[in-house]
Image 1 (cartoon, rainbow, N blue to C red):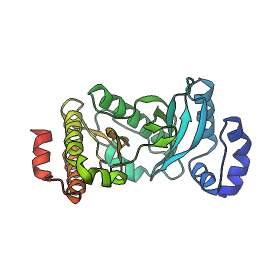
Image 2: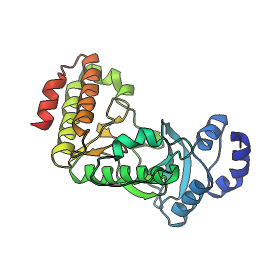
Image 3: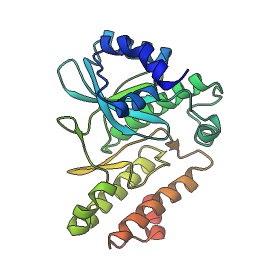
Length: 257
C-alpha cells in the first residue's frame, strides 16, 4: 500500500484523534510511522487521558518520529512513535544482547520495537532517578512513548549542534562540564551508558538535556566500555571544534575513575 492510499484510509481516524495534517511534509512524517496497531495505541493513550490532543511533528529520526502533544492539563508533551515497518533487529541487537536487564528478547519487528520503547522509558527513568536532566517519561504503550516536552509553546529546544554560535561565544566550557558530569552520574550511580551520545541528541534549554536513550545499556553489558568511549570521543570532537579544550582520554578517566 502506498503512502497516499494509507493516509487516505487513516484520515478520519486521525481526525478523531484531533490530528490535522497540514501539508505534504506532515503527511509523509505521520505516514512513515503509522499502522493499524499504532493507531490503536494512540487511541488508547487518548482514552486513558494521558494525551488530550496531538500536534505536529517535532523531530524525525532513523528509528522514530517525535510529535508535539498536550496533556489533560494542557501541559506540553512529546510523543515518540517508533517505526515498526522499518525497525531493524540487526541494528538493535548489539544494544539488547548482553544487557542483563532484558535477557532473551523477541525477534519479530513489532515485539522488538515495543521492547525498544520500553527500554528507552526505563533508561529515562533511571537517568532522572540519579539526577541527570532528561525528559520525564510519562507513559509507554506498544511502540509509543509519552514524555515531557523540552521547549516552549510548541517550539522544541535546540540541540547542541544548533546552538554552536551560543556555545562558541562563551558557554561551551560550562556546558561540557555539565554534560561530562551527567555522563559520570549515569555511569557511576545509574550503571548506565547512553551509547548514542552526540551534539545531535543533547538539547540546550538553559542547561543541557540528554535525549534519545533507547540504545542505552547497563554498564555490565559486554560492550559498555566501548560505547562509553565512543560517547566521550563524540563529545570531545564537538567541543574541540568550538575551541573548548576536551581531551577524550582525560574525560574518559574522569567518568570511570
